[in-house]
Image (cartoon, rainbow, N blue to C red):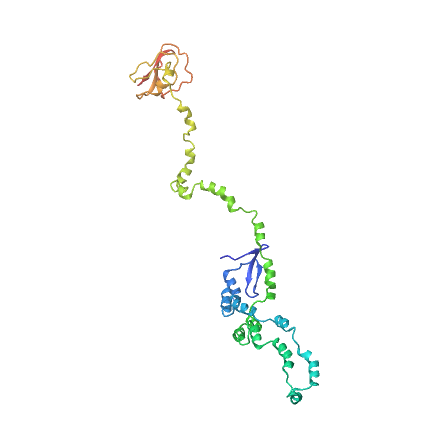
Length: 334
């Protein structure tokens, strides 16, 4: 995998000695440098194993619900607000100390106890809190014995001092300042968008792709002539240039109509003799379709020809011109 990056035209390369990335014009970062850089850092799997023995938040739900039912300090304060505090009894205690003690009145009142004297006291005592009333009142509160299991479980939990020792080898937030500053210099997604704004997107290539699909593939050309096979043709291209072109044959494509040959020479049969009595002859279908070979053109005439202009001979020899006048043209052996 190529992990080389560029910032301001420079290649980013990880320096394993300095433990950070730096700009370089030489070779860029490789996968091995990244692996070496991350060996001292904690992995996600290491965190899971480290915390597996600790209490999770979900485990404290039951404990939290039970604690919510226990007596709070504020509840105790409100409950004891109508009761006498120890500091309030100092003056009372001093006054009581000056009063008559029970031992002093025992002898004096031993013969006096009256029921009427205890009626008011009995009524007042009946209004006071009994032990049974206290039991019912405190039944919803946590007893000391009930906290033993909770206390034991709390003792096994992680202390702040234990966390400090455990995290001493890990990277602190303050240690990431340099890393954060270096990351701020890296390429952002927004920078990539601006950088690629002038490039062709995949969606923009649809028309191009359709046009490419219509082009000839390399596999389609296997049955065609290779460039190497044209060496002979290229070497003789000067000779090829002298050959008949399609455009040269346009004049040959004109058909000869029978109706247009009425005034032409009659067809030569090859048996000798005259081929016509016309005073003016031109090359036509009659002379182009001669069936027998001949060696020359023989002219026999007793009259003066009207015209002999533009005549193209069909033989190298013209024989037996008897006089300046001739009566006809005969084709045959000399």
